[in-house]
Image (tube, rainbow, N blue to C red; front, side, top):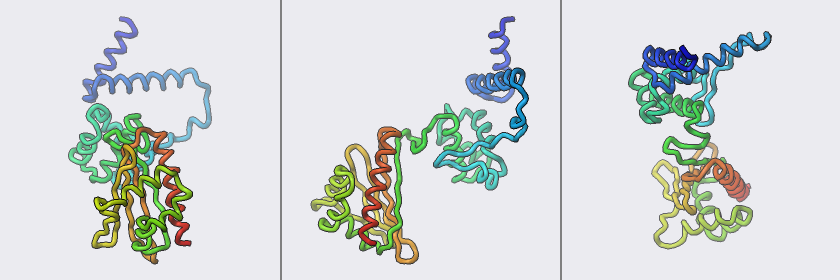
Length: 251
């Protein structure tokens, strides 16, 4: 029997035993063979006796420690569960629902564990949503009342003071979104939270004003429908500059 044929039989046997798809079973088998080979040829290393570091979630996912605290299992356990389920092929929604319905993982943690799984399996990049789009959020806590921050955004003369130091296109898009009778401006809810949504080129911007204790307000800029990770970093830098400029108005 050739080595290739023998390997296929091992993979099929694992798939039949675990219920995994062939590709998932193949990855586990090959990983196991690699580990065994390295253990035969590698010199003894004292550091190898150190317990392996548990997987950690990338930004947007649940950490291993929090997973153990809230579900009783670490991420490695749930990653194995999702591998057997076929999480890569079935997608985010089905995977999160499987954790919640079949394993009683609380909804928020089912979502976070699924995000961490997708990061680990290279299905999703940092700052990439489950629909494939990229977005970035930047926030700044300002020592000001909500009404004063709204004025800094909407009043033409006051806005000109802080937009002189920010990206030109960012300033133009904000100004255009507030001009004309069609603009709703910053919409304030009954609980004092404010929101302004508008287009910047092919992307969407949402500005949130969230009142905080002590006469402060958090100004949050979420920029979605970004093309890629490089654009995420570019917009992150632009929004940091812009929010710092707004904050400087109230110093």
